[in-house]
Image 1 (tube, helix red, strand yellow):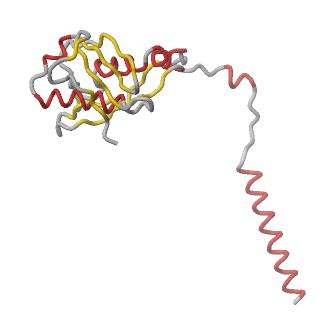
Image 2: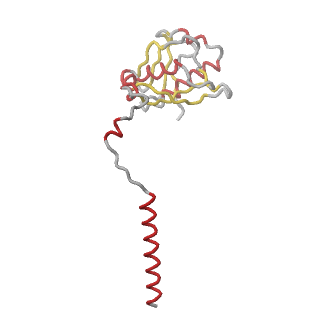
Image 3: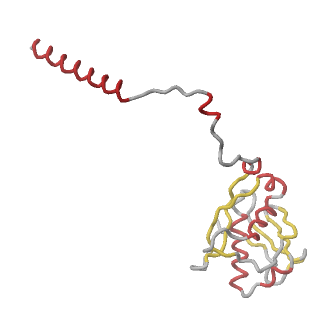
Length: 178
């Protein structure tokens, strides 16, 4: 029995030796110096503006399915601190980044002001908002605004004004369906 243990130990030692020999001859360790790092030039410096970007989800109309779909956009965090509702709806009015989506807003629609009262965001638009072609577009406008703004914890509903006045057909408070 001792002879078998001795042979087994010799085989293990030989295998360990072969592995050490293989590693020593095939793996090279190089020391990095400060010169190696100083020669690297990044393709583009990261600007302060890029550092201040955050992601928001906006909703647009899918051209193929005619359904409201989400799309991520970047926005400067400092814009959100001033008036998040105005900044987010402003991004909606700027439009989509995708060829598959389109804005639901009539051309030249502007947001005059946005503020919040009792968890309801009151949006005051220019009269260009009223140039929607049919009830489907009107409902898409309401749903896009509602889906986008109710992502904010404090928002449960929206109210739409045109030139500071309630408008027939848009004069109610729209709430999210929880």
